[in-house]
Amino acid sequence: MNYLEHLKSLIDPLADQPVEQAATLVGKALDNGGVIQAFGSGHSEAIAMEIAGRAGGLVPTNRLALRDIHLYGTAARSELERYDLERDPTVAHQILDAAPIHEHDLFVIISNSGVNGVVVELAIQIKERGHDLIAITSLQHSNASTSRHPSGRKLCDLADVVLDNLAPYGDAVLPLPEGGAYGAVSTVTSALLAQLVVTRVVREQLDAGKVPPIYLSANVPEGDAHNLALEARYAGRIRRGA
Image 1 (tube, one colour):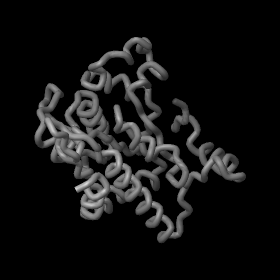
Image 2 (tube, helix red, strand yellow; image 1 turned 180 degrees about the vertical axis):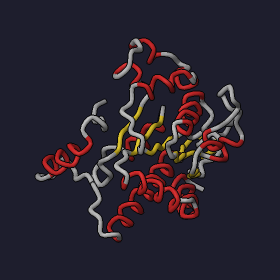
Image 3 (cartoon, rainbow, N blue to C red; image 1 turned 90 degrees about the horizontal axis):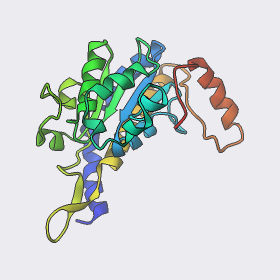
Image 4 (tube, one colour; image 1 turned 90 degrees about the vertical axis):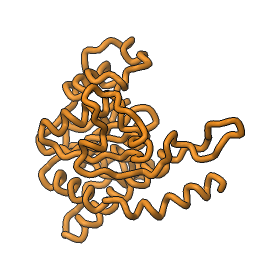
């Protein structure tokens, strides 16, 4: 199969993922005044961006990132240059300590492998603090990997709802002649899962007679005024910086 054929073979099975359960948790958080806190490191941050602060998406969303430990915390800029940053569980505490978290917030953690120290420790801390947690991960990759967290646990062991992006071990799908592969798929399938959850939440709110807080594109004439008015409801709780 070529790359597009591989993607097509993955898209329809995504419909079997527990999107409805994830949407129920998101809807509960929104009804209680919560914000959706999304975290992903490396390329998984692209999915956090898919959730937080984009046109057609929910306004009460916030993106957490590794660089928060410097931008909003006390870590030196040089800390961000560490090759093993996302493997260090202590970094999770720094991210949460610097985050604007409310008791009714829900968390979405995106990690293809689901085994690095930061994502596992984040998940542990999130659950210990009483928050709901949705994971977007590759179960095939996670199940074939060893946890890099001292507990031996993985992201998929801790989440209330696990959305499997169906990416294979190693992510890429097109084999190279002398071993290895190219053509990663997890970004595409994870983004689709994120949008499936958001669109279901919005549809459920509309069906219930509610007005969902949705961003307009900033590149349409009325976009800025519309978005700023909605963002004001969550002042100090959502970041739209770097």
